[in-house]
Length: 386
Ligand code: SF4
Image 1: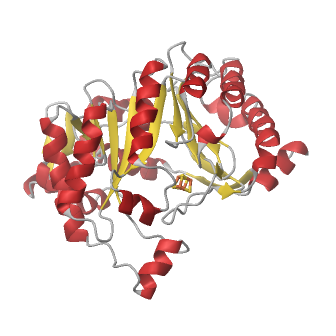
Image 2: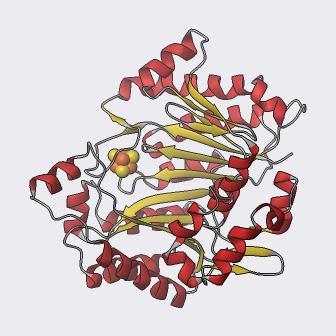
């Protein structure tokens, strides 16, 4: 049985960033306490879920990681996050040293908070740093400055955290290559163990979308974003980071264990409003609004809003599409065969050969992975498998 990844959604933020289209809400402080109770009930109820029988008949199925995402998980008190961790440990068999990540907003936490979080068993922090440039942070609607990131990292280290990740965004309107270099150079001395770098996408329904549509702010330039990605590749490579996934770099041995579950197309359970889950054969997702979620849990009703069955052919394609995002690991023949009971080269021989001939795929003795050229044309490669 493959161990599960457990995702816990915290759908609250203090303010709304200009580019954000995540399932998160401001001004719902009254719901924090009932929400945590509802979340713990959903987690405990999952122990009796028929979906779990697919994995194991054991009283407590094996899980490998917990990831608090949002929203802003650090908006809750450490004791509230600790309650949810205890609900996970009661319901699932988690190793003592399981990776437990909390996404944090710099500027909203201090040493006392971080010490308490550490004592609740959290061992990995992911900071939404985004940029070191005050003007860019303002455009993004972030409430913190880069000085807050520095203070948060120092406090985190003092509290005993030795696994810290940063999110940074590039390809912003008006952003120059030099400005992006300055952000990278500001982040590196803080020695993050992991960095996730995302190109800005302008999502419909966000204030940023309105601004660019009105012409107040220029559309992000994809060529400039490509140059910034190349620069990050060079700068982070020189600093000793491994580029292990299309958007993620880490110090050796510090890949995000939770996200590896997604990229390896392994099962995960998501808890909270809008959270998605995936078992071997089925995907399902929860109602989106926190009040609706809490009310349904209170009435002991299902919070599932939708579901789809995944046929074996689709699942095999997804293993390739997700796995090829892993630039070093790729998709190993052994893992594919173990997961699907069929050899990758029998199933996708034609696609693998075509990708190799075009110089987009590298077929090693034990795995297939993207070449350097394939990384830039990854969409073209991925579509051949679906
Ligand atoms: S902190 Fe994150 S989740 Fe919250 S509004 Fe900003 S981008 Fe969205």
